[in-house]
Length: 137
Image (cartoon, rainbow, N blue to C red; front, side):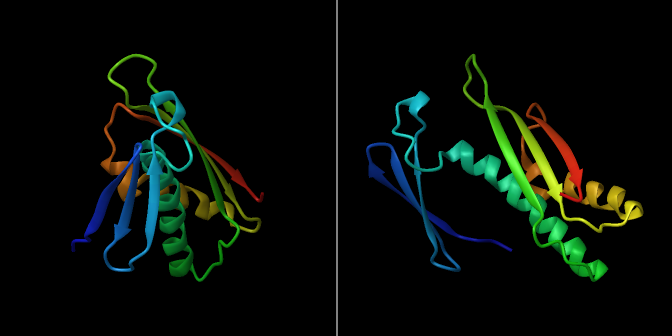
């Protein structure tokens, strides 16, 4: 399956991306520490966001298969960039907060599912991705 996304440079380091199937659009901006205004997600912010949203989506799929409701689950992502060239994402710290009532015997299954997130698996192996889980938050 393929998905088309159209990107247009708007000037002043701003880009509009439009999702072909839905027509939804978003803007990106270069971060302040890389010549931008930081008024929107940067492209590397979107990569970090994609990991968090992918994990929640995978957990949602697991919830469906278990007949469970994981509404309220949250992922907070902290992105760290390299301090020396080449400029790239060095580390993503993820704080995964799961709702109360998830049986302890299901937790390893959910953690494995999160590790298998397709976005996480698509990132360069040099990027450190640390997951810290909180159960019953």
